[in-house]
Length: 146
Image 1 (cartoon, one colour):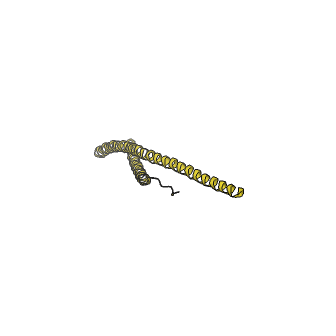
Image 2 (spheres, rainbow, N blue to C red):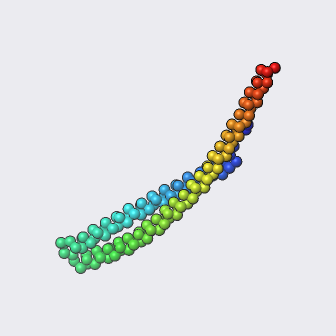
Image 3 (cartoon, rainbow, N blue to C red):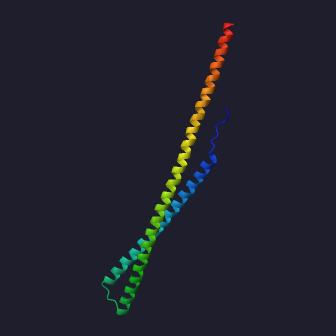
């Protein structure tokens, strides 16, 4: 009997490659989200430091006070932009995760089909072998009777 050959092997290989690529995109999206989150944490820490500086014991001149408040305003705007960027990146991570899971399911479906076909092939192979053994046994029995 011929060696087992899965007709959709090339499709399965493509699905595996697509899954790996989707997994890489998910990993990169997660890394980017982590970078943005770290940047957001740094900006928030800076903002807290500015608040502490303004409430500090040292008296500031009017110009220093205005300059510090302007810097706080700019920093708050950066925080808002970074938060929006982080939320956008989290949506991208979710989209990449869904894409990865979808591609994984497609690959698994083909692998299950391959497994079923192999089991069917194996059963046929065992059936043929058993049939041959039965014929050999029957011939041996016929020769003993003669």
